[in-house]
Amino acid sequence: MANFILSYDLNGPRPSHKEMDDHLQKIGAARGRILETVWYVAYAGDLNSLRDHVKSILGKEDLLLVVEGKEATWTKLLVDTESLKSTWRANR
Image (cartoon, rainbow, N blue to C red; front, side):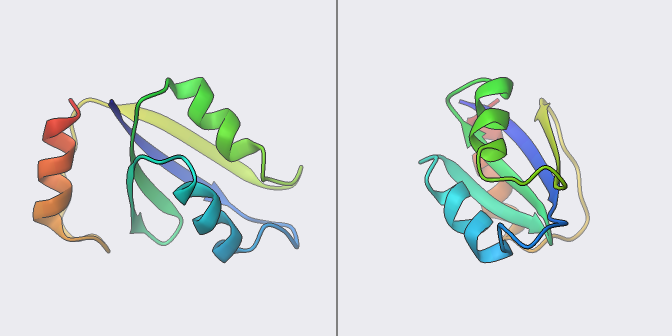
C-alpha cells in the first residue's frame, strides 16, 4: 500500500460530492477526508490506477490531482490526527 493525497474540484452538475464520496469508498482502501475536497487514501495500486478510478466518475469540467506521499505534516484536519498518523506510518 502507498499513501496518496487526492484533491478535486467538481465544477459540473455531476458528480455531486455525495456521489464522489461513494465512488471513493468503492476502492476498498483506507481513506478519509482530510479537508473539504482533499482525501487521504492508502491504496494498493499505483498513482495512475488511482487517478483512473477517480477520473472515471468526473465530468470534462472537473479537476483532479493525485499525489503519492512519503511524508506529511499538518496542524488540524477533518479526520482524527492519531488515526491518520498510524495509518500513514503503516503504509510508508
